[in-house]
Image (cartoon, rainbow, N blue to C red; front, side, top):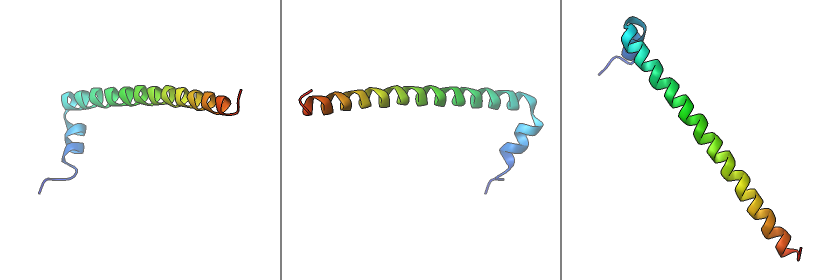
Length: 60
């Protein structure tokens, strides 16, 4: 069994590993923010399409 805190200890002890870990973490945070923004755009577009369908359905 591996030490569950082993990676945390390595991050704390090894500055090179810590820098690489932080760079990967920063990239993941940026990627997630981009994915959330893209999702928001998709939701707004879907809402607009639904509004158009409702308006057309009412004869408008």
